[in-house]
Amino acid sequence: MRIGARTLKTGIAVALALAIPALLNVPSGSVLAAISAIFALQPSVKRSINTLKDRIIANLIGALVAICITLTLGNHYIIVGLAACLLIAILNQLNLSSVIGLATVTLIVIMETTEDNFILYASIRVGATIMGVFIAFLVNTILFPPKYEEKLYHVTDYSTTEIMKFLRASVRKNSQYPILKKDLKWIKSELNRMDVYLSLFKDEGVTTRKKDRIQKMRKVVVYRQIIATTKEAYNLSYTFHKYENSFNHFPKDLRILIRERLETLLTAHEQILLKFNGRVSPDSVNFIAYKAPLRKEFMQSFFDEASLEEYMHDDYGQSNAVIHIMSSILKYEEYLEHLNILISSYKGNDWNPDTDISNIEHIEQ
Image 1 (spheres, rainbow, N blue to C red):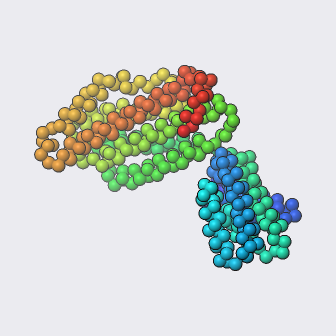
Image 2: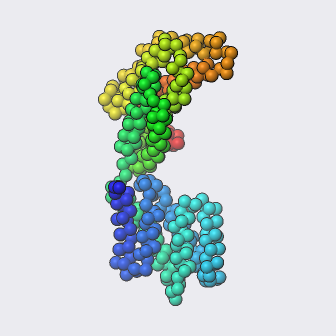
Image 3: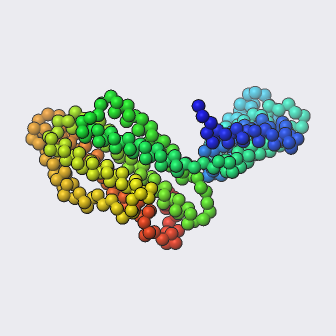
């Protein structure tokens, strides 16, 4: 068990939301302000900004519905339930479904009041809710602003390294089927974490300067391709795992060619990542041109093996295995080529931000 930055910020936001209304001599709004702060705290600053307006609008609508229905129909528990249904329908119609929870809480708290001065009580509750939203926004923005790039880089780097180990073990017939099956499940969960961190990284570092936004989006594009290439490496590992028995019965010369080609690609993958973190020159890693003769021999050997006459008399399983493995390797190679081009461009000096400002909307997509 550990207390992270977001957990700590939630505690601080709740404490402030409880204390500030009391200092303003409206202690009855403390609980609702604290609840609002919990709902409003987002994992990134940009998401906090995007939801700030929606939460305020949703709470105002919830308060208005609560006041109108209470003054006209009363606050019987059946009426409260119907009012909640009405509020949810309104918010869904306005595309505010993400803030239904807090608005419904506001509605219930207001309708269940027994105070004589109902309008004043409702106004205090709405003000407390909006205060809680602002407190959560300020705490999330000022205290420990989230930094997701470091997390994204480390999970990507570690997962890619593990996949490379699996691939090298597979082509050398050193992997154990049950253990690798378990490890592939773990890698799959890490790939999902990469997607989450990429989304959060894209949301952090809000700025109004177009040049800064362009540079940030270029890095997002690079990370997106890094993740896509890692996923292709995972798919290749899964293919070797699935067709392990067929691969072990390939001719020795073909297995050696596969091992040499994969070693070339895996080494290139390592060098490209080193290029991204500045340890290799942007003009390095020309693995395609350097190994062109080997690639030609490699592909011809695959075609020859897949079309063997002896494979045409059964269920084509061995021939299909050859084709699946070849296509997985070639797709991994394509993603590596594209990643190499992107990182070379990103780390090189051939980009002029003044000429690309007009394309920011397209890059952000």
